[in-house]
Length: 550
Image: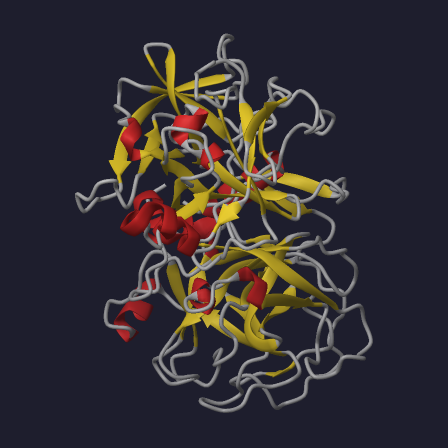
């Protein structure tokens, strides 16, 4: 499972400004899910080589300029690092091992429409696009190299032309002896320098048993190998994540990605590639839900203004708490907000972070099989669009301290939530994302509409919040405050809001991220004791570990 973040999540789709009228839809026979296929462009080469220059990639030659229009260069801090392939206007596929150490999307850019990496003025229509999200396969194993594949979402969609085009995924069995082509800007000899102009080489798909023999049983179902028994043709350093494309008779399709090997071009050591056909269901999930939902972390009501119909608990400059405009918030303005209910009664809030998972406070004591998650609801007195039983509750381990240093639970839903305009996940921040003054934050839930903390459960509401430094927070709470906490004004506490498990939502550039979950605070809404939230980013490794099987 991959969460919307950083970058994750995940259900953030191709932007609505893109004209998809040229796309056809191919259904994967096993999953019955759609993959976006630009039918008239995918895998079609726009330039045919007139000559081949004999110095390049291991055993290959320089490509005719712009003849592989789906090939991209992945640049880490403006330096070429890996290759990749365009599969839709806003998605690129590459190898997961490229991002093993540096997986923050903001460090990466994609160069499309390039042939000569060192010539900024070459003919063509080169484009440099930032990466907004990196989604690596949860089954990627750094030791065995299984499922070595990542999807990169671009900050803006590409415009397809003769220099920039996508490529389809190869869906047929890869028969041994088939000739395919690998491309890249990697070294032309083992441990040699990388090249500036795109190279290509033809390789032969080898039988699985031969690959396994050469690599002493290290091959996995998600891999295949290609090359020659005697060596001499191969990808090399710098080609990682680049495409292995096979010709169907009318167009090329993407069968694999450069993954690993021993040396470059050695005899009986062919290159090993990620078999994309094996990962098509995972890719299909991401692209399908991206197409269905453009709403991860986005408020859903465009016509209802925040200032109208909103129950806002505001804090004045003299830190006096007052309730203004005590009305409901805009209906379905917070589509990740969920109500946890037992026997039809609301008792806690939570946030949808994936269609299979909800996060809330551990002290809510959610009961698996007995309690339900209610999604897509605004007024608790009326039925919701979705009510899903809690299948499993996984609590973050605690050290027995009181108050608890960590107070989180993950709830696995018995069936996945249906993503719609009223229901979609919130994004999860990077582990190293800092909450500074550039963020604006709110907390939402059903509960107190009075500063006394009296409950008036019914309509959802929000509380605008500003952060409080840990140093200031420790002055108020002493040694109870840990680095795993976020402090805010007391108005955000569960006792003031009357709603445990409520999310701390922080917004930048129009997208909300889940930074915290209400943990504890003062009994009163006064300004002397800040409210405490569990800091989600600190527990990102635990969240990833628990949810990785989905």
